[in-house]
Length: 285
Length: 285
Image 1 (cartoon, each protein chain N blue to C red):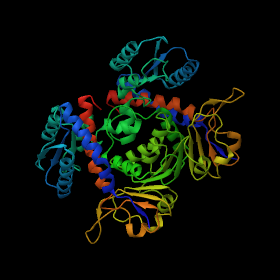
Image 2 (image 1 turned 135 degrees about the vertical axis):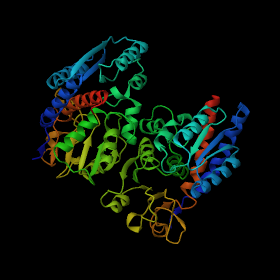
Image 3 (image 1 turned 180 degrees about the horizontal axis):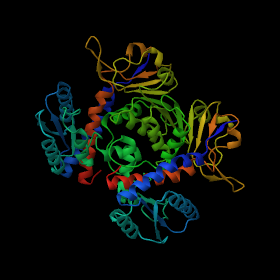
Image 4 (image 1 turned 90 degrees about the vertical axis):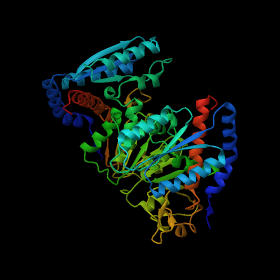
């Protein structure tokens, strides 16, 4: 029986400190405010937006919804981003991706002011994750993994960590963050040979492939900590992770559930970044 | 008896193509030209400068030497970099580091135009290495490792590669370049537990710690390819690598010597970047 690393517990532990920091911002003259920039009416974007709004409300973070039609032009999108950059009452911007086909996502990401890029999508933010220098936030999901590992006291210094998946949203940035914490990090992916063996060798496995229940019993060993970043649907159309939870849970030492794991913490992490950005703008960070 | 991966052989293989490209630039109206920006009279900088000048001359690349006194101010250094950026007849700039104490090295690196940053020291260049997007060259030493691996036909796709050392000059960028080639990459460092075992598990080991002969027989296994990035001096004041060559060579399948390995190829790689930058400026890349 593995220890279940509940995201809700982490969120509850983060909340009092975040509320206090919001209060500090308000007293210093500004309410931390998140702009949510959505293009079109993608159901998963709408679902995430509802979750974000609820969490923002609970913490006292303001929300500014910016909705553009799915047939918006690149210029109109860049105009909207320029307005976000210029608006001093907005401290962070969450832009849902992928953008509808035809829009230049790279240009949109690069256009966002790194100080307001609370989800680590701009080149400057990613350069910060890679080099440790400059200014910028890591992607919220990568930071959420670190929060869960830290909350549950998982040792990273000297630990062997396998990260499966090399996206810029999660795999590569979380690998850099783990490396900065002195873990020995192995980056695996779809071309890795004998992936199951690589996973079994690790103290901590970060599963971030986006393939439903792709990690079965053969991937796990006793005592491991498993962080499941996936948010997928299985054949029965139930929400599930990258890990076959029922197969892994009897083997490993600790595991995050889906739902109720990393995704839950990601929203709080987004708010944390907005609050930090507001504190920086106020000079009280 | 390991196969010796001679840097000289790689340099000789690169030379005809590079000379032809220089000729192409000249015919299109510009001689590829490298500015060497040196602050003070550090003997190792002077030694590298002589090597670079010789290689440039052999390939037909122009050299512009910019020498500033060791007591230069930050403003004077930034002025010199601004002049390099503005000078259309300069296509690349090699700035020796570390800079003398008291100078703001991060600011100097960030000031260099990414198009002329042929050694991957600016945040934009490093962001390119991390994200694969944007414009910029990787650090020449990291690219030299890839050239040696490719020249000798070392399989990277699906291979297990251990990179020891996590600097921005070599460890982190070469890890990203290997990942882009579909290797399974483990990033090790001074805090890695049982480093020798991690090294023995790999198909390819990149040794980049800067500690003379730190990798002994216990780190190696038959059939491995060893890339030794170190340039150090041993107790007898002889040039040596990070690897104890005499201990490793009887065990492994292939190994780069020091001197005569990666360092030799780095200079040619620097010239290749200058030529590429000139081709880009001419619109013939």
